[in-house]
Structures are given as C-alpha cells and as structure tokens.
Image (cartoon, rainbow, N blue to C red; front, side):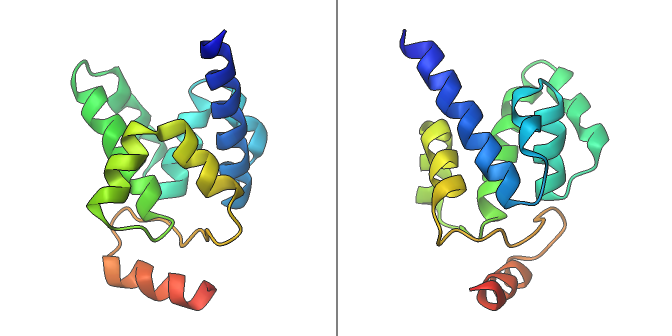
Length: 123
C-alpha cells in the first residue's frame, strides 16, 4: 500500500517539476522519456540516457543526475545534495511545488557563478 502511494507522489512531483522547467508534464508518466526530459533540464544530450544501461555506472549516473537537477535550481550545498538523494521523491515534490524555487537553467558545462547570476536575475 505504501509503494503505490510513493510512486504516485513521485509521478506528481516530476510532473510539477517538468512543468516548472517548461517541459511537458505528461512526460513524467512515460518511462525512459522522463529520463530524457530530466537530461534536457540539466542540459545533457539525449544520448546520455544510454549511461543508464551500463551496470553499476547507472547508479553513479543516477545520483549525478539528481545532483545536477538540484544544481539547476541554484542549490549548491552538500546537505542539499544528500537530502535530494535520500528523500528524492519528497525533495523533487518540494522543488516542483514551492513558489520560491526557480529554475536557473541547464547546469551541464556551466559554471557555478553563471548559475548563481541567473538565479539572482530571476529572483
């Protein structure tokens, strides 16, 4: 009973987060396409979805994608990285629903200073 509830909350969280990043919200419920949209949000090429097919490396790449997603919203502290990994569904839900969370743009191949400047402009 708890697992379907967490899966539902996760789908709603991704839907809201994708919409906040000007991506199609319905992509949250389509397998593989949701990963491609997450890659686009952080600025990675679509072919990086193939990294999820490599055993063991897919776990590392999944954590890296989560951290880059958090960085795309202007969060750069180690505490936020750890919280986003441990409480992933609820952290993404918070980013998707919170009014003060602003998507700063893709983080892949961008400097931290560039993202912080974008966050200051958008705030």
